Length: 240
Image (tube, rainbow, N blue to C red; front, top):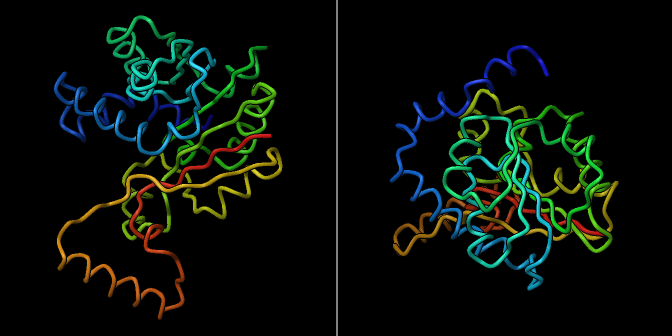
């Protein structure tokens, strides 16, 4: 890891907490609720009903997504994150989940374990390109025969994607459905896509404004669906 990246990740939780006004218990509860909604709306469809599945989350942060899985009945859960502060919080909040501090790639390289699902949310955009391909390869190696990987990354077709790409100095790249397909296809046969964090509006005025803006984009040669244009993240589930 480059020296500037190592420096930034040493205190990543503290710095980002200052940016977002701290990690108070109320903030963590809100975060957990948000992760629970994302899990139910976008992830659960890929998990099935086998509650004994072994699941690994790379870049688990303070454990919000794993908490949602635990509440849904999955108990064989492992989370790993580079930030010690995040893991300390996660362990305090749910001691029934196995949490580890470390680099996800190094963990996989030094492990012989197989997982039914390996998931990663808002992590790949922090990686350099060679590390991304290496990580996907290691994920493939550590998937069970019937397993798969779920990757959720910022959607660069989102209308506010420039903000998402540059809001964090540790972001190294961005993804579209097409570029996400490119990194998964060499290792997986089946790849399914969906979009997450779709911005909902009940206002008729806003719906009309969005439609007009979408048509203007099309006139300019940017031919993406409204779903792609208004969704903050793109999600892939890849399996054999």
